[in-house]
Image 1: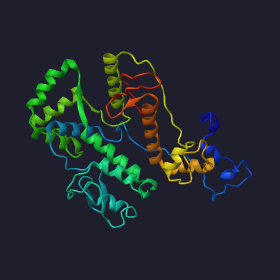
Image 2: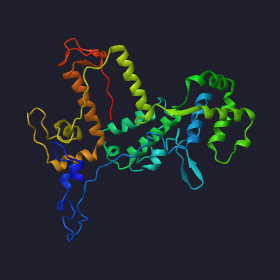
Image 3: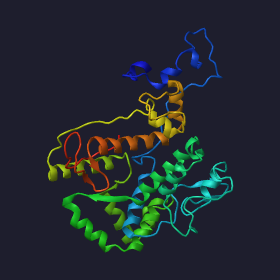
Image 4: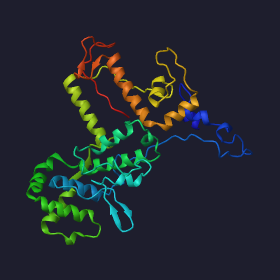
Length: 338
């Protein structure tokens, strides 16, 4: 079944590890060899739809965004004894979780004492790009960082949508409610101990409005709202430029690319040769599984080179180059990553 599901022009990396050579028994009488590594496809656990975030929390975030108040409470609460470790503006969070990556306890993210502010995403990108690849090769750092980043997007970019017919009436009611009332309603909504009876009349009116609106998160990659936003942008291009003349899917394969082997750190690959000598397929598959950051960099480089060198697009000017490409001069294009 695995071979049928992964059938393609080239063999799947996992097939190199199949059979008794990978520790898997070919017959019922053979024993499993625990000393041999078996390649299992790595699947990143993410929550683009925010389904693990309670609906009351999403509504509370949206109310806070309307009130334009500060965000002092963390989205991620790590319980240690009776104390809660804050996620925001806590430079000791990641050094405390990963002492092997931060051996001196310095260089944590979200340091409020830093003179030049660095965003959470930029700091993580920097850690992935430094010469020491410990952050890339760690088995959980990138997943924890991605989870925190997604939760922040859900926290800071949650908004209300409403039907067009109800927009004016809902807008007037929201504008008439003070930010303090919205803040109190947000805190009550997020707290599971408080009840509707504990609210004042203004706070009850604010919560009644929740029945007429929907909470959406449009800035989380992979979410349904983000896909709808991409479709709307494509339709805007169609209205301005006309229907696209070409649809294509680009799927660079890092496993068989000499460029990826160099980006991984293989100094023996000579890119000046027409057919560079590469390590065996099994080793290439292990490299791909070990360094997904290099695979992502390879994908970005491949797409950029295809549009610059084949299609003649000038990224600096945001328009087609004077010479154009194999399809002539591009007027516009739209791309999205699966």
